[in-house]
Length: 170
Image 1 (cartoon, one colour):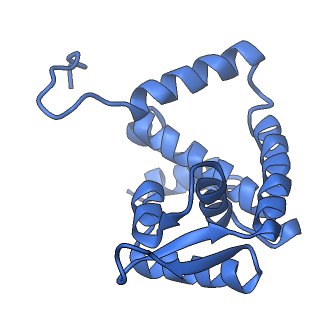
Image 2 (image 1 turned 180 degrees about the horizontal axis):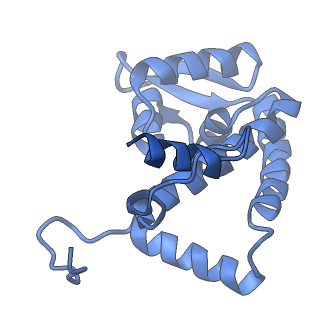
């Protein structure tokens, strides 16, 4: 037992994370998750220069490109829980990028509208995210980027429950 542990310790380089076991490093969902984490971290790092993060830019994108939306609709679309959404909107409102107004047909709900400053901030953020995408996908050829995007879109539009899918032999 001590020999096996000693062998594992020698294979690690100081300061580097340990190598992942095959059951993790060869599993597609795990690889997608890790890539998404790295992309998200790079986006947040780059957006910090304009005082925003990726979630805030997601909200600005939704309300500028689609229409004013309720807090609940934003949370559902972006998969952000209610408490976190309120905090994100509080921050965006404090920065002057969004305004919340009572929904005209549902007094319990608020519609989130972009301000003129919000439109400007969103445009700046998109330019940053265009560069972030170039950096993140730099190891891929343009054709590979297109193929990756097409494959991820297919995964994102998974069949409804009960629809037969191919057997992966697992």
